Length: 74
Image 1: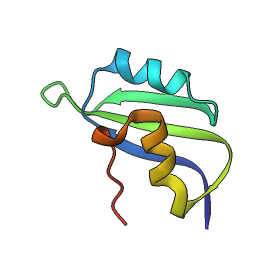
Image 2: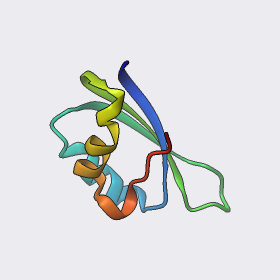
Image 3: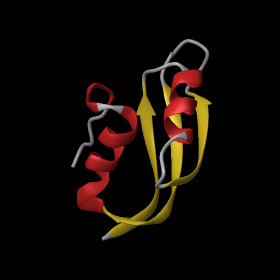
Image 4: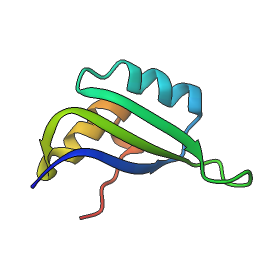
């Protein structure tokens, strides 16, 4: 199965996330929203330029966000 978009929850500052995502060559666009005013985590919807096999999503996220921020649940 291949995906063109995905939503993840990340605990990082919005400015830092924007810089990382803007620099990614395989990301077409993205939207970042606060979960709520109390929770520091962000919901990120990522739209990819090309379909990516679901088995490689973790590698894609690690390459963009870094290993310590990324964990995909199967």
